[in-house]
Amino acid sequence: MEYKKILARITEKWPAKVTSLVFAIILFAFHSMGNLQERFFTVPLQLNISNNLAPGSDFPRNIRVIIRGDETSIYHVTENDIEALIDLTQYNEPGLYKAPVQINKKGTALETESLQITLEPAEIALELDTRMSKQLPLSPRFQGYLESGYEMVFNSLNPRQVIIDGPMKLVREIGELSTELIDLRSRNSDFTLQVRIENPNPLLSIRGDGMAEFSGFIRELLVIQNFESLPIEITGLSEELSAALEPSSASVRIHGVQRELDILDQQKLLSVDCSAITEPGVYELPISVSVPPELTAGRKEPENVTVTVFDANAAREEE
Image 1 (cartoon, rainbow, N blue to C red):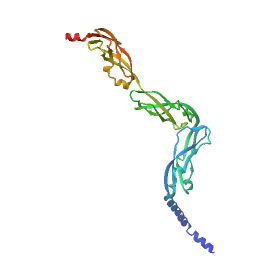
Image 2 (image 1 turned 90 degrees about the horizontal axis):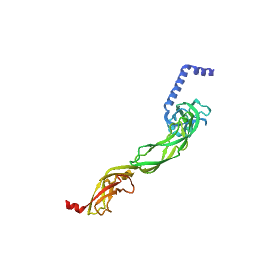
Image 3 (image 1 turned 60 degrees about the vertical axis):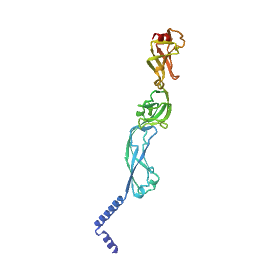
Image 4 (image 1 turned 30 degrees about the horizontal axis):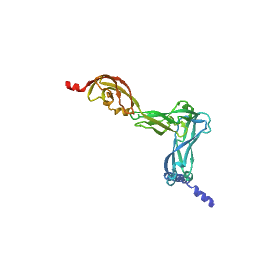
């Protein structure tokens, strides 16, 4: 009899009691959710595929991770505690495939209870193509110009050839690779530096460390310069004699580095040696060119001049 009374009291107004209980549960859930904190960070996406295949389309390199939990726990979880990956190793033929992004929890993430983790994106569609390797020549790329008057006579690049791996449709289209820009501005001596090999597409991988050693060998530029209508100086003539030249000027071609050519004294380049003349008369003598050892004199025009020599004393008496 007592049992029936207790049951009657429990079931009395049971719809209202059930409603109150459900409402209390909902309030508790909202209260608990309101106390949860969120944190965002990104982690690199690991891609697991068969060895004979390669990604043939672009895909997210990083995954956005959203973790929810109580404030005392979520801030102990770091990027190193979460790994994101997609596993396509079950596929062995080229094609378009879709797979969910999976997570591996490590460290603090494993130790933290009731941790909610959401990934964006949660699923990825990826085209897979046949993996192909190819050996390509490597060439340097330059920017700027050497200092005026200098030239690069030789350069070397190590390695001269590199191997790339990637999807067949991309590898087939590439004929060579190049380095990053090598700055030549204002250089005037030999130099060696490490340069990065430019990757034309992120879906390709370059074997090795992706670096090359470039050496440039620089020399002063040898030029040929013509000097026109230069005066001819008379040297070695006795003070008792005087002379006149025909013609009185000439031209000469000089070989050498621009730096030396720029500082030449053009008034003293050409001369005629008259030290062997002892008496008046008409002589034909060669033109001499005086240049520093770094320069070389070339063709003169004319090669010889006519020297008319007078008695200097007689000339003064006539005056």
